[in-house]
Length: 182
Image 1 (tube, rainbow, N blue to C red):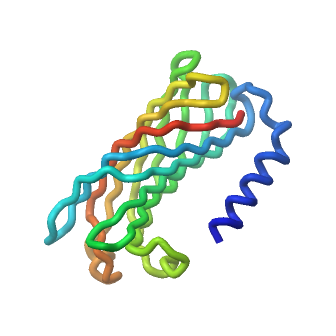
Image 2 (image 1 turned 60 degrees about the horizontal axis):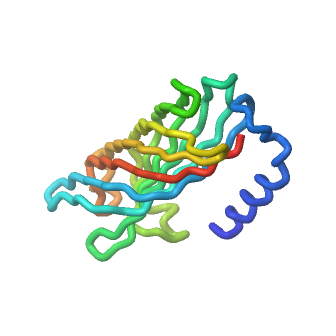
């Protein structure tokens, strides 16, 4: 399933390349990868502090050279108690260029947490609230460094009902290199 999604994204990006003229006005797509320091607070268990892999994407619309609205998604992958874990936040937000190459962004939305990174995890997850705040710097025409902070809160009753080993609060600081197409 993931291979099909990646092929579709590649086809979409290459077939729509004429949309992206280097200006920040109009549609934009960013894809980034990096590392995060994640802390998680578990109810009745030992808290966790670890370094993990992170993927991030943003799709949005620029209203000029400074302001954009976007849908952002951040995925954190790690192991806890011998199980693979996926924590993903999907959020709606804004991005603002405060200088020519320096921008800030913020988004708020939904966090999903699953103990299994597989197709069967679709029915086995817990949902909560999540926020993402970040700072980025364009060091080349289509590349940026980003530092972001994300926070997620899951409801303890939902965790208990699902049977998952999930944190009630999860915070991360991410460092990513981002490729972007305007």
